[in-house]
Amino acid sequence: MKNSFILASLTFCFVHLPFLAQCQSNVLSQQQENLKDSILYLYTSYNNLYTNFTKIENGINFVNNGLVGLQKDYNNLNGLLDENTKIVQLFTKDQIFTYRTQYYSRRDKIINTADFVETANNSLNLIILLDEVGEYLNEITSLNSPENQDLGFSLSGEILKILETNIIKGKGKLNGGKSTKIIDFVTNILKSPVTDAISKAIPVVSSIKSVVDLVMGAAVRGEDVSINDVADFKLALMDYIQHYEGLASALNKFDNTLNTLKVRKVALSQLLRQYTIERINSADPGSVASNDTSSLTFLINNKFNKSIMDEAIKIIEAKNNIPDIKEPDRTKENVYNVGLNDKRMIYPSSAENQARFIRDEILSVSNEYIAAYKEYQMAIEKVLRETLKKKIGTPELADKKIKTLNAKLNNVIRSFNISINAEQLNKKFDKIITY
Image (cartoon, rainbow, N blue to C red; front, side, top):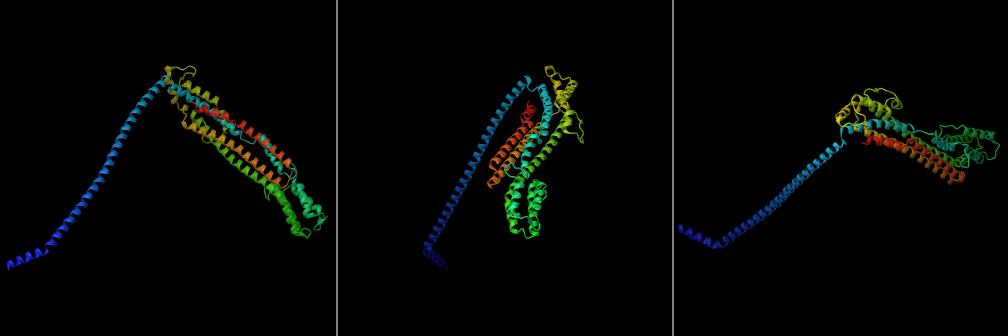
């Protein structure tokens, strides 16, 4: 039985040996493939790790190099600071940054600030409509009069002509009434315009509207004036209406600009007043109460001008035994330090910035006033030239009017510049920031 089993087994092996060999071969091949994949994976992982490590190492080297550079910069900075310290010490020995120099620099700032405030206040007060400005505006205003003939026509005359041509047409009576009565009504309206119809800024525009209303009323009340007559009448007046509306529009824009600038001027005046009070109370604590209503001009005249501040500082110097500026004494350096620490001699750095803002704003408002007048002039010229294109008025007279307006505008600009005196204002400010 046992021998039979052995024989069967041998027989099975011989029969299936090739298959087993192939199986073993397949297993070995698969193991070899798996090994290759594993090795490839390991090499790939290693390469990635090495690459990352190299990057880290380079980063460390970069940081180390940076630290070395920083150390060098730090050493250089220390050297530079040492040099600067020596220079500062040298300057100190030469009395450039001594207590005395600092004291008199601050002293000058306080006195020069008072001088600046007075000049700034004068400039603000002179941003007003001067005589030359009045003449310029009067020259333009005259164009709005129904009787004005500066451009070669008068509104009154033109309207009466159009009324005669389109409405009356030579008739003695109109709707049962005398034609002359209508003419009298129109003349009266033009001389005493109703100002609340179209434009309050330029009454002559409302005059035209009132005349149109009168004619339309006549058309409604009778048959002598037709709707077509009224339409022709209104059409004939259209160019004149556009002319005067153009003048009104230019004036309205001009007025709005001036009103905006007036608001800025008021705000700037309040700012300058508050600035002045701060400087007064710094030099003389409690001198001006918080509810004080004195005008800026009064405060300047009585509490804060160059002369007053000069005398006030002399009193402080006498109390602190500070020598006269003309007789510096190196042995009394500490006395100047006492002067610097006197509360009445405080001058914050913000005071300079406030003064700069006030100076800049005054010059800005002044320039914008001038720009507003120039823009108004251009608008008026445009209206006049558009009117000439419609064959209204005389070209020669219109050109003459434009030249007159330009001449008067130049007077306005010159007066502004003289009054504001920007050069003087800048000089006063420069003295504040000069050390």
